[in-house]
Amino acid sequence: VQLVESGGGLVQPGQSLTLSCSVSGITFENLAIGWFRQAPEKEREWISCISTHDENPDYADSVKGRITISMDAVKNSVHLRIHRLKPDDTAIYSCAIYVWGFYSPSNVRGCRHRVGDWDAWGQGTQVTVFS
Image (cartoon, rainbow, N blue to C red; front, side, top):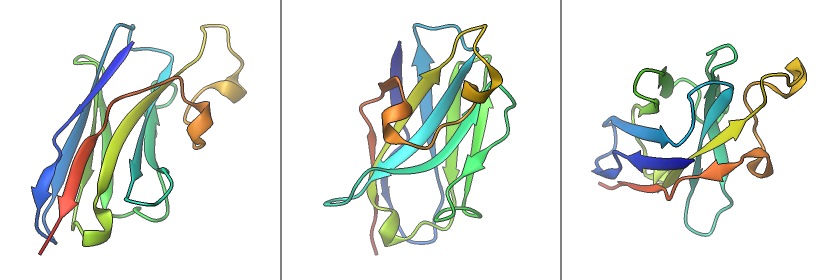
């Protein structure tokens, strides 16, 4: 499985940005895609997730209200739209995949929040918010 992020760049405060995570090498089912970010000298932070289990978006409190996650199962991709960007949003944004089996119980299906729960990661895309 391979995940490739795109859409990062330099933006000014208040602007919006859409990040994309393209997934290949796996059938787009029984999986969750999560977005994380890591700012300089800070730990990796989970910010959002969506899964094929119920397609309900999940957001961290720190970004809730400013981000929108969506899934495109036809194109095997997940998009993260970030609104009203702030300098504190400057970070490397990475997507990750969590996969469960067809017969997996319901309690292991869906989104995960812990970094260690995810099976594979993309390389990340840099987002820099500057005045």
